[in-house]
Image 1 (cartoon, one colour):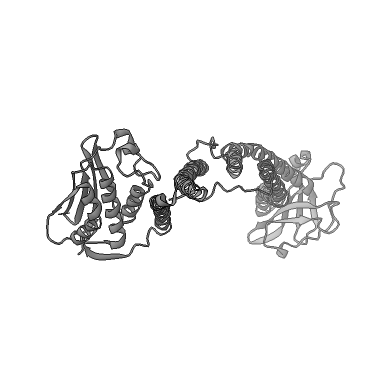
Image 2 (cartoon, one colour; image 1 turned 180 degrees about the horizontal axis):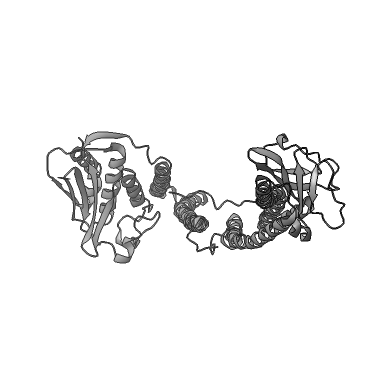
Length: 483
């Protein structure tokens, strides 16, 4: 493909350093937001869960204690005795737990007491066990206590008769302290997790952000036209693949840029030579250096140079058309044998002048192929013209068309000077010319074989070349047979 224009020079709105800083700030902001939201979640939901858990744990502990007390009192009533406070005396030494024994009307029969608080014995509590199905209550039981209390209760029964209730109470401040301790542990765990989260943040920085910064730097270099720059990212992940893709793109652009420069140089050289000749001869005629009787000869030379410019321009337009429309071929079925004979006939005058014969070999009288007839005719024209150019006088050009499987193999072979080994890899390059002294026609454009290669490639086929210096050159390509 003929490259058009140099590398695009983009002007980013912000430099790569600014973009990297923005990305860093985004990471930091996201991390800070995560930390704040995590703290709020723990503070709001964690405190509720901790308080609920602490209340549940404390109520279960109190309920076990009150069940033991109620069982002992029930045994006392069953044996015919009334309330027996003997086994309750040890609770008087417990500072955060208070035991009450109530009769059926919620009057306090016994209060283990707590240091600093007046005894409730003889008072009636605002307590009705039917108010709630739970085995515990939270509150002040009317005005009996100066702060909220958590109380677990159990009925005292004997012979299906309820004589009262046993109740064990604990200050809610003690329960809340337990919840605060649990919440403090959760805060410590969250702080540890927050600190540990720096590790994935560091991994993200070294594995993503820093490579992206290098990719951004590379993109900036490419935007400024420094296509030789390569992004030093070697990882095998998506970021590494992106860097490798950009490096490959830069290499292609660099190659296209070099090809463009070479193309412009070759076009300039091939246009300058005939234009210089035309201008020189016309100036000589104008100045009277060339006498009128000789002007016809030089006018023929000028016409030849203009034909050379026309051929060069037409060849460039052909390549441009092939580049832009690889899929624009007009396929049809046609006889390759007849087309070969027609093309050879167009070179009859040239071959007769140089005593060059065509040795035509066909495996069958008619071999139909499926291809773009106009393009394949152009291929044969260029290959035969190239063969004539490098064939000595009184020689032959062998052209064969043979059916091989489902393909037709076409060969054009001359017996001229051949192509040196070091030149074989360059013959398809546009404007590339081997030693011009080997050719009889020194007016070639250097685009003929490039056009041949483009047309055959557009057909999805390949063309091969076999050449031995001093023995000649053979070009071979294949086309699908018509079904």
